[in-house]
Structure formats: structure tokens, C-alpha cells
Image (cartoon, rainbow, N blue to C red; front, side):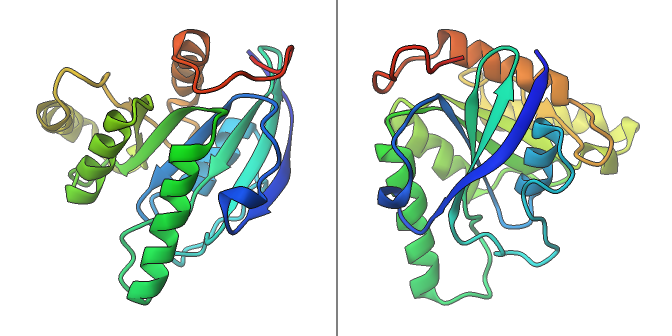
Length: 210
């Protein structure tokens, strides 16, 4: 699989503002400042496709990016982060409604990638989101970000900790580093496995899939 091109195709404040589904979609979820935009740029092979910021809570819209690949086109959806305290309760509720509305209603969505800082333990927000996805039969993968910041000697302990919390229902998390490119190929392989075998939530136009 080789990325041929990538472009930003839509930004919407509600799922209703997104274009009609044409190709499979993969959503990137995670806590504010976990590195969603940086990882998306690595997946697309572009340095500045998605805007990155050191300020948590920067992404407030659903952004769609079309990635053209030798294995077939798909859309990557960069969703607003959660867990950032320096916004109003009303704003956090609006973000939650936006994200849940997209996840529950987007027929072309095939897979959710839950991004988690490799140095941090999964919290109630992450476990609750995984349970929410499971109830709606939406496949999910846990993707660990910032793996370059975890020492080699610490990796085994972190692997055991994640395995204990996640249990046998989920595959082992994919370790990635947007800075070094670690795990990007493995992540694409995992995504393609779901696009090829995962359940469909709606019929796509002929010829539109991967």
C-alpha cells in the first residue's frame, strides 16, 4: 500500500454538514493534545495536512481528509478531543454531541481509532468510550501515541498494563510515534484488515471502497 495524495475535503460543526459518503471512513478519537493531527499527518505522508497545536482543544470541528492510496481511497476523520477542562460545560457538551452524533450516524464509518498517550493509563473517559463503541457494534483499535517518549525498559510494563485493562476483546494496541514514524506501517495494516473484513454500516456507491 502506498499513499498517492491527500487533501482536506470538509470541515463541519455537525454531521449534517459533511459531504455524502463515497468511500470508507476511519475516525481518530482521543483526549485533547494526544496527537491526533500529528498522527493523521504521518498516516497521510504529509507534514502539514492537518493543523497541529500545542494548545489542547484546538480542533472544534469534524475535519475530513481524503487519502488516495494504491489499495483504494478512504477518508480520515479528525474529531474534536475530549477531557480538556479549560472550556465551559456547555462547550464540552456540544463537543460530545458532535462526536457521538458522527459516530452513531455516519454510515460510511468503518473503524474508530482511539488514541492514547503511551505514557498514560487508560482512564474512565477512554474505557467509557470503548464501551460506547462496543454497544453500537462499531469496531475500535487502540493506538498508542508518543511511543518515542517511553523508554525501552518501560515498554514491557506498559504493555502488560494495557493488556490487563483492555482484556481479550481488543487486539494489542499499536505503538506509534508521529515524530519518528514508528508503527505507521503496522497501523495501516490494521486499518486495511478492518476495511477488508469489518462489518459494513451502510452500502457505499459501487467502486467507492478500498
